[in-house]
Length: 157
Image (cartoon, rainbow, N blue to C red):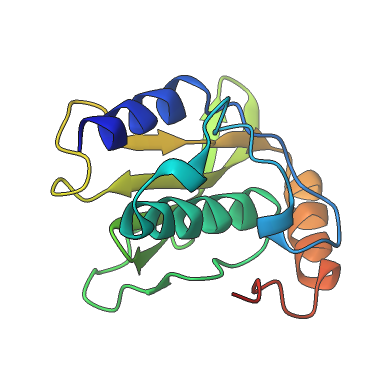
């Protein structure tokens, strides 16, 4: 469990993920949130949780829907009208999508917020995110690209 906590800490400190535009399966792309981490050394259960969480994180960053997590039908949607919630194995994924005003700038805050369950990540840092500000046009382009990128981004396992 200490190793899993260390992985979470590294994930948090390295969560400068970039947008993924490749037509590869998400699982085949390197994940900048795992820096120098060899997941093959983890127990199968931990490896599966982290792999699925990062597949979903990368998919959302690329403008696609989560691959593994399912919609959380128990959570009421917020008033912003765009944020959505998903539940995965050992984690919760929030896709923030909300208008944001900064002075005279109106933009859309969009991106994944990944929160690991406390039984998996009991330390202080159990969350990573990559929420960015987009112009309406830039976000529309990302989301259109995400839906046309891959017909089915689910990795075969």
